[in-house]
Length: 470
Image (cartoon, rainbow, N blue to C red):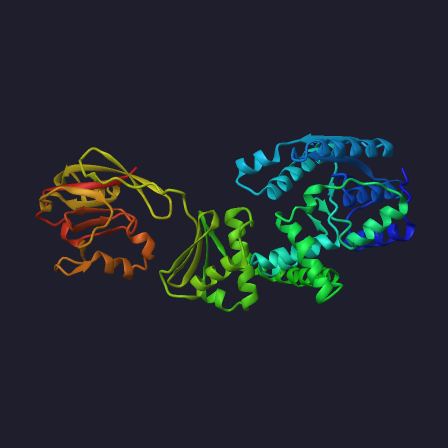
């Protein structure tokens, strides 16, 4: 169906789509159509392109359950447009206010999230490769300003991409004013959404209050300039992402729930690329980037460039730390399990948590040394302790103030805290590293494989406690 849009307007948008490589001949495209001016214009454009590009098209409309009869009227209008165009029509109904409360989002966020779920569902059902949405030049300017206000970095200031995964935005090169002018000239009707005048929504405030003030008093073409600047910034970001990605693959190592790199490598990076590497680390661990702002990136940089042992927490339970010569970004467990101290008793098995998230199981046994040759002791035992030197209860527990360790048989001692420093154990791990101790004398640190020399076996030893890893 031809909606009668001016040929020069169609060609301008088609040129933009070719330049950005938004779709190819024979593509299947899901069109998100609300019934408003922008999405009706999007539908009209693709109807004009359908035969020329041999496109498969389907229309999706989402009723948000907010505007009652007006929303039902929008739904019927989009359905009628789809029928006139001969396109499959899919409609979804939702209680967006209820979903917003359930998902702990604003209604704007919940509506956007639900819409894209619906678009994706239809895309898969139809076997299509693309989803087209009706964001235009003015939307781009609003997005950039919104990101600037919320403290976004360079990436956010690049605004929306013309193509992002299977999402395409063919109208980013055309203004709202041109869309409305073209619809009026073509005699194409559209629905008015009263919520667009509600300045309680953040983007509506920018659109309805802020831009008119700036355009009236400072710069009439401010939205064009912002959108153009965003395009330049996306080009810069594309190059930076390529460079940061190369560094990330070569220098950043994955260790369980953490990314680790050498501080010396990080310091060689230009400042701008440091930010991008940090962003890749956060995104890689969290699996998402929402709620990560430029402020968070700077916090991580301060930790990485600061003193050993410093730490900062980020959204998604992420912790940035500097550990001597290395830098770490770690996904910490929510509500870490606490180890309960246990008395060492022969014949029992002990599950010991390590600070890297691993757990090891050990069997403790009491034996007569005469039954074992030196070779058999090494074969069967993980660690051996002279039982006759133990005079009180021995516990697996967390470290305590006053704990100490024998370094050699001469009785040279070292405080456990000092030993941790010498072993370069990060501050946040020291209190959660399980030890085996008799009062304040530490017999064994399983994770470090260190034993106190006081409990070494000797020629006079008769009985021993040996601990074997299972």
